[in-house]
Length: 585
Image (cartoon, rainbow, N blue to C red; front, side):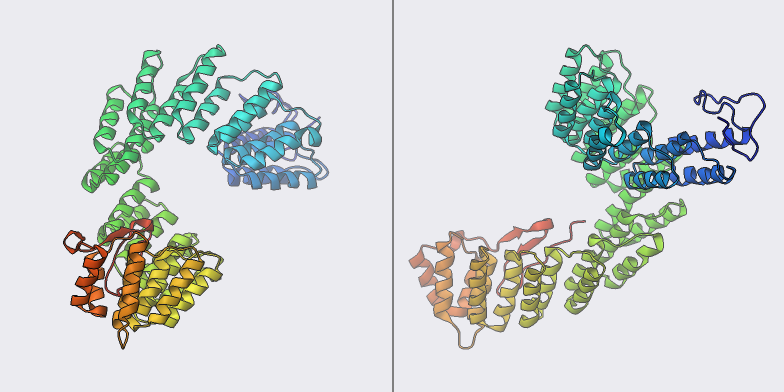
């Protein structure tokens, strides 16, 4: 039948574009050009461009005529290549409203969209519905799509399940299928399983290609075994296959994960020496290795060399250096890198803004941290949990718990869930100000939010009771901890003894009882606790207690330093609240 595109049906010689076969035959010249343009957008995954061209084609179609299903499927192809499952599904509904039936090829693009996004559940639901919806059997291509989806999601067990189903259907897996299985193990960081699939591939009389072996290299690199990754890379050469830029880059990236700047540079030079041209990912991996090893000057030098190589440093390149400077507290350099990002006409992403917010927060500049959080919508970004937590913790460290509480309420108001770190930092901040009621309120609010207060949160409140000399409150808190199955640590017991020392009159008996209970829990005291105990019972009685209980004061450490979540260091002190936990950016 005639296809009307461009108002007038084409009656001249047939126009057949390479790669379209008979698709353009009988089509108006302008219509064929539009279809070519549509396909170009689809191949690139440019949904916006594809839909724009589709709109032109639809406008050029005479009333009463319909665009062919193949054109609708080409838009589905754009969604598939973009990995936009929900968009593809919405387009299927649009096809249904236009009375365009979905065929197996179009449905396959919907499955492919879910697979490319790593949405295994959605892909499985679609492929299992295929026989009922279209009365069509699952072919080898769709099995490969499912295995690839599992690989992208890093789920080797599900990939193997689809491989078994494919074998049960008496379909022969090909090289691409085995490569996807190897890749699924690579993403899971299991090089042994990846190698096992390679052996099964060879046993099936299939010749591994460069992509298959590169997936093995990647699995070794991601598991942290860079030496083994290098051996597999050499095996690619031994088999007469030429390793490409990707093959070398995965090894460089493995070195970067370990912070091995020397190893990353060695493999980078090796790649250049064999004639492979580094790409943006290669340079970014090398920059990341320098950043992780703390060599910011080398990272900066490689950034400039990347630009000199006629490559355009991307957002990842800028974020690596921006984040490093912000974490080091060098906000002047961090803001310079942000300016370079904007000068390169690259929009900051959530990582860029969170690095700036976190940097200002760590520097104690609450105003700038808050300002940058408020500026995120200007770049089309929505502040996330990391953004708010950095500002909350910054306010808490600045002894401004009221402002921290306001930011937490604002965070809840936009539908985000604060974590234990945010609540505990507010509790600690109120504790430092000896505001026991407020600290207790936030501990209860933390529990009411469905979070489980840990020993750090309880110890922060215990410190508030200690400063107030509230022995009954501290002892009641111990009971709450036991009921919540939270074990007091040395800092908790130090706060309990400090409460006894600060009470008027002093509670000497309760302080001695706390020391005995601490020893019964097999917790070794430190000299800080004994100094606090001096304030409760006196130095003479403390010496007698130590002798009686077998505590060797000379062998005790000066002060315990313990690490909490996020790498924050907490130190015990006579009634002082524990250090707040650093936000893990």
